[in-house]
Length: 238
Length: 392
Ligand SMILES: Nc1ncnc2c1ncn2[C@@H]1O[C@H](COP(=O)(O)OP(=O)(O)OP(=O)(O)O)[C@@H](O)[C@H]1O
Ligand SMILES: [Mg+2]
Image (tube, rainbow over all chains, first blue to last red; front, side, top):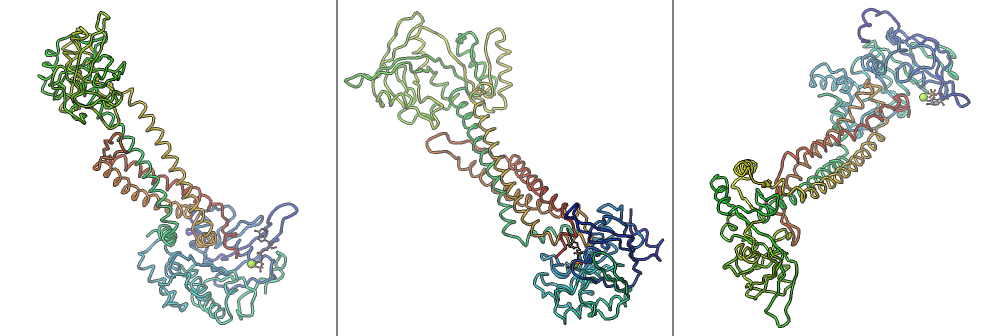
């Protein structure tokens, strides 16, 4: 199945739809119910936070939304596409075209330069000349304030700079959905605020959907919605 | 550029130490096989060369019923008239006792092969003259050339008087006196080191056998040996001649060498196997250190096959560079061995032919090995769950 084909037909569906999602790790006595009957929808252009105590299932939920892991029960739909029965390579293709990821740390490929890291999602889709990709990547790096670092080796940056490169890379293909798992968790408050402002600005400008897991919801100020998880269940949606 | 190639080359070239170790492992595996091959092929060729030069010629003719009774001149004349023959000669071989009569206490040796030769034809048809390390070739009907081992046993030197005793066709002992004119010796000892050489007519007179044991033919071009064999067989269709080319005549001697080559090649390929394990280890190290980054690539949109390809590309690059280096080193060794005329100490000097095709094939095997060695590490990446890999 070609995930791109569905976009036009179902343009008005939710970008994320979670239906009675359950995830159980392990089996028998040592099994952990990480997600328990979780249902919600996220609309296009929303800025959504996922919060909850440690172990409440935030990362697990984000991995389900990002199609990095398969649920034990229930369904997840991305842009109207039901991922339940997609093959590994179809799921990869959905990620490539529709999703950008920012992790808490170690997002970059250390052997590539900064600009190559940002070009990677474009190279994976592979349309356009490499010079055009480079230009685009440099533009986005300029937006995150790294115009001067483009040719540096990825592992020569500071933590805050690395996270900004990760943001640039997550955004460069203009994916409909940007997922972040504590993207500012390893940053000092100044860098953290820079990254948050950047994400919110891009959300406003480009109408991309952001779903961000965080322990510091205050830092984000006003967002569209906040999903509060507790013991693998939705405690509230605010 | 394909991003998989980009990522693969970046990963590999950032680990120069590991990369060079892996490349050298491939190159050495190739080199070892080439050295084995060049050496043993050189030994086999050297043996063939010496057999041609000293013992069989390019074509060896014997009689199935014993000795050849045809007149020498007739057969040699026929062969030389073909225009393909550089020289042809007959030999008569017997066994003799020899007695060095120069010393007060005579020194004797028994059961020594004695080869009767036609002196003039022998010099055209064989390289016997090259084996004379001391003295000269036969100068008269009563001169004798001793193999170096025989001379040593007899404590004999040039000019020493000898008494040779053979048994004639009626079973009686016949004795003649000879003077040592030359000592014959070759590296490897394949020629006449353990025998004696005299004029064939003297030996015929002594034994009363007007015959030859064999007819040796030396060609201008070895390629003609089949043709000469055919023509000779046709000419003497009525006789019981056995006509063999050097490949046929030397087969039993070479069979041992050939199985030696096969065995040593096997050893070489085991060496290649151990190089393959080296590459697997190095690549597993890279995979293990890249678990997190593999997860990131998967999250960005690579599928399992893409990630596998990234590692197979690395194996291919290692294999290709190792193969190239192996080809250069292997060719350098083979050319050196060919031009310098490699020999080991006192023994046979090797006849090496540089065979670029063989070196290229071996290098290709090295390349295939590099690719094959990357398959397991590459396959292991498919067992990584991206969700696990990207957990902090
Ligand atoms: N691979 C796994 N195998 C077994 N249990 C797991 C696995 N991954 C997560 N869990 C368990 O699932 C539950 C939810 O984990 P998850 O990582 O989603 O929590 P979280 O909300 O992201 O926590 P934190 O804020 O500490 O990152 C926890 O009890 C955790 O121990
Ligand atoms: Mg977490």
